[in-house]
Image (tube, rainbow, N blue to C red; front, side, top):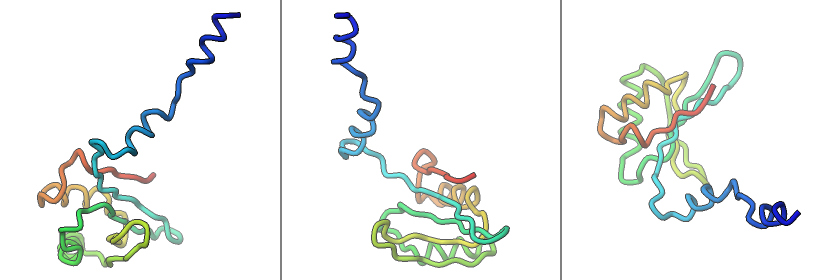
Length: 113
């Protein structure tokens, strides 16, 4: 019985790494590219986490020209400025951001299906 008592007192904490990442010490800033389903086959692609020093409107203008889609910049109280594009543009946006030198490939997280 004493073996089990010692194992229980030194239990493994599965959230220890997640809590350590939230401390901000060496945490990476990721750019999140997500897809949101609207109605039927329609969808939105959202880009968040870009640095504030970039002009979101200029990036949006280039994205709209490059991918022939419409889009807008939305101000969110929690997330800050978010770029929204029509359609599933996740891979296109990620390659564009890397080729333009805005973000490194390691700092992009693609979410969705």
